[in-house]
Length: 342
Image 1 (tube, rainbow, N blue to C red):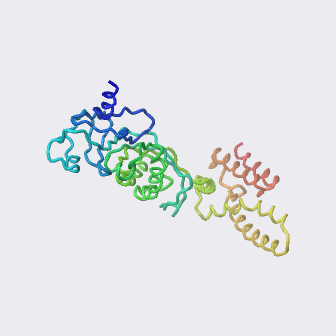
Image 2: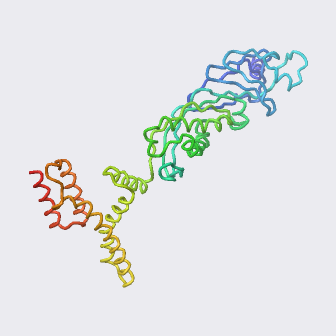
Image 3: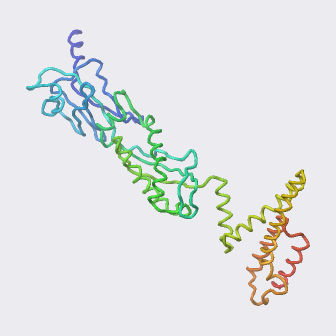
């Protein structure tokens, strides 16, 4: 009886794989020196593929269903093994199962800012992140290109490679979408679709199908974001780029003044003085234009709207906070404006 049990263990009647949900993409059936019975059964469940490999060469591929293993159902293996008639004895062959389920919620993101060309700014460095989903589409290609003879190949094993493919094609996606950076946040669906189209061929070359791509956020590095915020702020109050530069110069004055006070050397003071004179002239022109309407030449009170006066008071307060207006100058202008409100 023990001898019969031993003999039975040498042959495989049913070949199947019950996935354990651990993110396995490819799994090699454990042969352990055993042979497959002629007429044995191969059970392939939904969302699976099975591949027979003979001496390292991919032979027959099976989809979902229960398959009886004969020369009719194994035509490629029959040819490779030179079976010239119906085989009746057990045979050896490696069998690999592949999961074709969707691998969802895979994350991609830029660890470092990526430089792209932009219609508005010429070039920007952006950060972006989102997720994607894929599945095995071509088991033969995936086996030969990725999984090979490993006993098990998992989603985690492939994660770094696929993440790199996504990041590699971000610049292509932005270029093909034609969407300026300022519009990317409002067109994340279109950008994600462009990224999917740009990356899909690279996935296909590995035997994979890229199913979905989503973008959750796109942003600039902190230093560039500050510059963009300033530009947007100046755009809101209706000033052009030349006035934006004047605004930047005005902001720099207090810092330059601090640097001049703490600096050393006649040359340094001279440079600071020259820069201060140039910035002072620019500032004087800007303030002269901005405050001209506040004095005697201002429009008639009837033409001034309360919200305009409040807005101007806020701007004057900013100038005072930056040290550009003295307390006395601010108080005088404030008094004039409040009279208009009265």
